[in-house]
Image 1: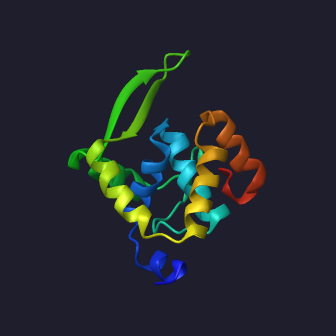
Image 2: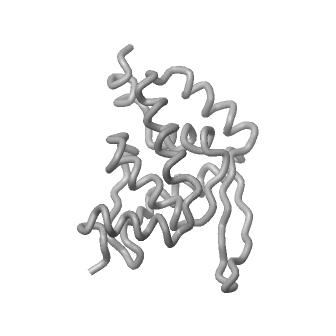
Length: 146
């Protein structure tokens, strides 16, 4: 099966699990939202959820629901901490069961898709929320809140 054909058959849930399997963890809800938004914009890997513009730019309630579902299923786990300014900070990480499932999906992806995902995570995965928000606003002015 060609890589493009396989991608059309992947669900948004599977893509989310693959990204977490490769990233290991994502710190911050803002970073999580922007990471997946940019996956669509920059790597042309569609996750099948809308990203309307909200207070901090692109935000998908559907993505939040998918993440919450994975947490309930035990495939993702999260912890709550605080930032230097005492704001709440969420850290999402892949569980062992989630990684096993994500790696099975990963094995079926084309080399091109794998490279795009790894490149994307390397570029954006460790950005601070303020950095990734600034990047989104500067690179995609249509994503800025009105």
